[in-house]
Length: 448
Image 1 (tube, helix red, strand yellow):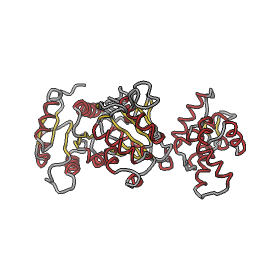
Image 2: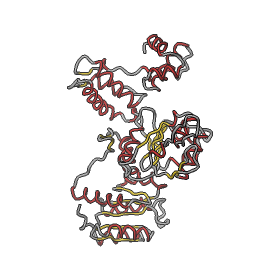
Image 3: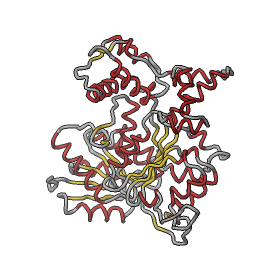
Image 4: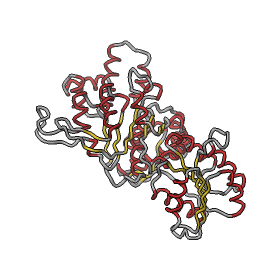
């Protein structure tokens, strides 16, 4: 990429920032012009054409707007609607910075920025400008893209794009089945840590006795069954990303232990006195909302602040109706190939039934419903009658009415446990306290 003809303007009231960016870019571009006073922006733009303008978001209150960066962004756009502006912001301003993209910013960087990220951002902007093509960006996950064309998902994509290259801790909120784990994976795979480990832990499923040994590891002899040293998940993720799923379900005692590790950026395995330094990017997820997390009887506020530098809310499928058919076609194609049924199509009645359903189980429910449809279909065209939605979600919704019928309660409990164990009958029977044979009898009794 040839940038030698490019002129860059940098506006920041911190001389050290101006010097650092000028030294970084001067060998890459034609000229780097630096300016401390944003009031001089208009005259500078009248004198010279700049390919990229790098603009700080705060200037010690020189302009009484609540945020100077947005003010000067709009001023620049009034002069040159096509101007490409990169905003520089601290972590605390990240939501405002994301909103500034809608005001016309091309990108933003978090302080302290990574030099390679700043150079890459400048290169991409100039390449796009010179090619005259605006490329749609979607996060890559294991060679594919997260699907979504709805406004709600576009907002998620914007946040992933901006947050992924940083080391900011991320909290992902969303209902069960919305794909929070896929978002976490996308953040990792679009980050500078993508070639290092991505370690997922369902902390909500860990018992008190397993919590510390699984997360922090242990030394041989630390407890009765500790026959050899074992590395914890924090150490396994060193250099990469640690994804703690269902973070809202851990106890206050576990939260306190976790907070200590995150504050000190080191972990001490059970049975050891030697702390191990950590270099991880932390991503957490929960199906609880922030209001529930903010209740200090259940969750420590200091831990929320520690894990929630940036918050991403994954919308439920009912709020992204325009994505339903897009996702449906994707899943039909996948399962038609998997089950050797090529050439599958869906008719209008099938599409109508899909779009009229509210999907309480979100994308996960849609996926399972379409897999069943493909398996059970007798023709290569799917009709409305081929689409059967899960009784699990229907019954859970009805269970909110506190049905006290004994058989209904038993059926509901069995469904919940089987779903929790992802269809594993042995684990489900063990959790229910009955034999596999007894569980099969009950499943047959209730038509499961």
